[in-house]
Length: 348
Length: 223
Image (tube, rainbow over all chains, first blue to last red; front, top):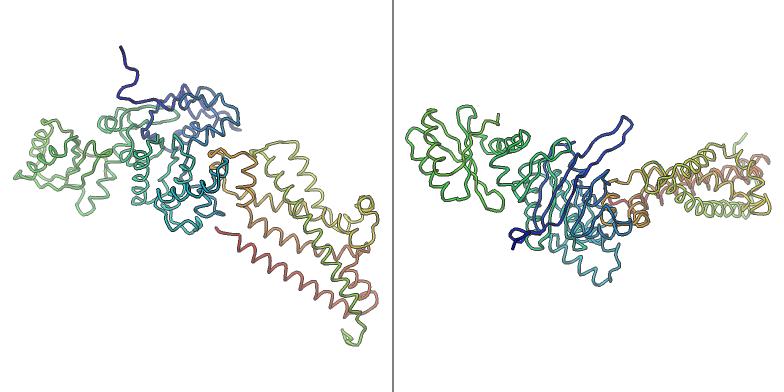
């Protein structure tokens, strides 16, 4: 006896040896190079990369807005690359997509924008109105039904985008830099909404971003894209803890540095050592923190504590001041108990 | 010598008739120009490079047609189109006879304005519609036309005003209207008052169109 799918995980989206070459006037550009991906049903899969890495081409291949030069793309048991135009249009109705700049019709109200995908299919008026009301409630835009996009904030516009994308009960939601045009607080609220939808509807979400914080907050798996190739892939926890490729380390490092920069404004940066402590056991972190605080020759401040991916692990960033050997011995104590520690140099 | 002799005879019934003829030419050719301009503008936009129905031959054909007829001075266009006018209308005298040349003069101009308006539609919105599984036809009706509506209405306002100028010029071929009365009964008969009053009436029509056009454009623009 053997088991094909571990712990009930079912593969939903599959990209096999996908190549994308653009022909331009100055020759051909190899946007994606032998990309293969498997995305399981119900997971939130993040693809991170710098601009120009091929992220937006990659996400557009999943609903075939971009046609691959070679390779195959399938969702469930349907091979998208084999479909006729008409079949593809029908398939696209089961794939929602949201965008960095929301791409709402300014000429339509919130309710009319959400109605758009429903108008493309033959659906009864009564049913349509009920569906719109449900969606508006789901994304928390009650009372804004007859507002025009120009009267909404960025976060509200993205909520309309999400409602519109979910209108036809898709199996997959593609997020094209969906939070990149939003401020940090709004980003958080949109990410929470996505996480909520993922949990309540079991919707598979694929997102692309250039921000590690987005990956860390909601993704379970991540792929790192660099110059058209996937250079690293795995569970977010693992990739975060042990980034192998230099580019991944850059993303993780920049992310940590950002955290410190945002939270450590009042501390003089130069004479404090910043350390990230990470564990799956929050109480273990707390025990070690109290032992750090107890050390006579060290000054210790907790800069920030945050949950990593829906609470499966926790990270605390502390700033320590004191003699170097004291710090070393304190940290080796923490390490010996199975916690991960990392001195952060990447800030300045 | 006085510029205007208010004692000069003004034939008000024929002034009214001329106003009616001008309005008739404006409204009828306006409707045709509107429809034809949108169709040509859409074809230009859709068949252009990277368009939804990219087609080099159709694009070149329509683009040349538009460019040629937009460049010919209207007074020459009227003369050139006399055979066509006689073919369609059966005569070349009267307000109806002016319609073909007015429409063919104005529609290409309007088509370009429509095309520019369509180009301003956010590419992202078109992409979103494609991602939702919209057909090309649905994209035209549900995205392109509604999203370019302010350009379509403001372009029509500009076109209508230019078109009124052409109705006056069409007076030369005996189209009637305020242009004819201003020239024949005013200038030729040395009756400046008639010319003056015809001008005022044309200005009033232009202002009303501009005003109404601005209101409509503002109302449809929700950006």
